[in-house]
Picture 1 (cartoon, rainbow, N blue to C red):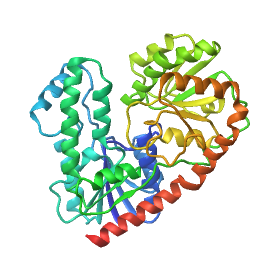
Picture 2 (cartoon, rainbow, N blue to C red):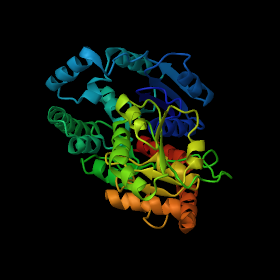
Picture 3 (cartoon, helix red, strand yellow):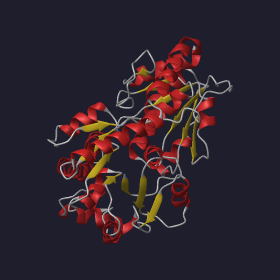
Picture 4 (cartoon, rainbow, N blue to C red):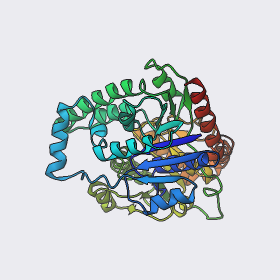
Amino acid sequence: MKILVIDEEFPYPLNTGKRIRSYNLVRALARDNEVTYLAYGEAGSDGYQSLERAGLKPVAAGQLRRKKSGLMFYWRLLLNLLSPDPYIVTHHYTARFRNKLNELLAGDPYDVIICEWTPYARYVRDIHGVPSVIVAHNIEASIWKRYYENDRNPLRRIYIGIQARKVENFERRCFGWAAGATAVSREEAEEIAGYGVHYPVEVIDNGVDIEFFSPDDTIPDPDTIVFTGSMDWRPNQDAVTYFVESIFPLIRQRRPSAKVFLVGRKPPLKVEQLGQVDGVTVTGTVDDVRPFIDRAGVYVVPLRIGGGSRLKILEAMAMGKVVVSTSIGAEGLEVADGENILIRDEEQAIANQVVDCLEHPEKYHQLAEQGRKLVTSRYRWEDLGQRFHEYLAKILARS
């Protein structure tokens, strides 16, 4: 197949869940197909070269230079109230990107276009003759609804509520423009199918590189708790703030020596300030998360907002770690509480479980082993890439 992927950026460095997923799946597709990757970015950049090394043909549309701060940012937010599309769509839609896409389509014909994020479906709405497949990393409307439920600022809550409705309306429309769609969980695939689409929605789980993320001989610190995740993603910001303010004090009451490492790229000021709390370390960007996970006595996923499924949980399980997660944190994964993960939602229950894991690690050795076995048998990138290839072939046969 000759495949054209459109995305917000070249998926590199591999330091966010979306980048890791996108890179591994398109690299798998490039083994047996000709794959062109159009994204905002610069020719010759590290991301551009990483795709070339993986056997793809990257095409750069230049940088998307729209700051997320300052007067112009707030002016764009205000103007978006006049648009039927949500801000996550209008922010990414430019004449420059559209023209570059049209240039590619005017050249050699492509068999299929992959929209590597739901908002980019706006670019294929009026394209005929080339089927498109939307890759839904999340149901975006669900994330915005949870933003709305968890925000306490009245004015911001009103704006988020407006955006949540726009995102839901956009998603209901955009999946109808495509010839196919993939989701990361059965629940989200069923939600997309419920929009009345005329095609089967395929589940392509998130995955993990089980050779890269593997147990080693490091002896865990029985006082160390770890969370990893991109700190420029709002659900992660909410999660770490919630943990430090509402759960960590309960842990310290029972285990005063406990400490938590919050590991992830681009923490905003409000997350950096959490490092002023005794026992809390905010690392910022690190070259490799594995040493921090290796050191952990327990790995926590205190998410209250989210969608899709958590690459971070798969990585921790692959390294043989005990994972304590909220129900929302564990959404989309075929895990079972008490068998391969520990799921707790009430603050005191989370704190008690974390302390028990730190104080009695021998009780949870078998649970951690079962987590590793689950990841090895179900969540390998190679197998998921083959499933994606087969689904694209099925969509082309239907078109």
